[in-house]
Length: 299
Image (tube, helix red, strand yellow):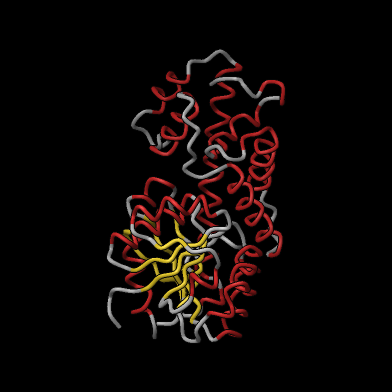
């Protein structure tokens, strides 16, 4: 198989659009579809072919890549694409869908004769645009030559977690990693809110931890978005973070765990979304520390 592929990208939000652009830059033919076509249309300037239906996007594709909101959305879109899907096509499923949904999607792939790769990614807008995502992937060794060029185009590194995409080993690792990211994001918002309430200059906190084991580049980056009112455009939106947090809590519950921090994270993201911050960067969970009437509070 040639390294230059025809790739169908279903879902062109923050992550999907960036991945589509990097696939075009790598020399692949890209057919892009999004439920709201206007969000996909800018990709035509980069050389992607924007189409009207999922079936048009997948027709004749070597690889289908899904980057949608959640598992039900993926199943719905792939069902729309089903008449044009070709048996033997590689399906790179990069949506953070949750463990149970991965099994359902793998069943769909089996029914349609697709080669299923569970392949969520770690990273937000900036690494996605730079093609520097970390790809977590599980799927059969036979056939990886079809998906490796895709992973190379969108990511800096691929970590293979297993041979069976249906087992969801890549998704499991993604949920573990996201549990840390979302917890730190919420802790960042809380420390700034507390500093404000106690009349403490946030910079004095950063100075106190500077260079020590408690210092983090991620903490400073997310705090900067809040302090400098740079929450839009989102690197990763509050609404999507709320969905991922729910998946983490559900995964813990199924395995008999009580994840108190993850549960609180899910509640904070949901509260911030309800206050009108759903489309802002997930750092906007900061506002969940305040009563709704105070959501214009500044850090």
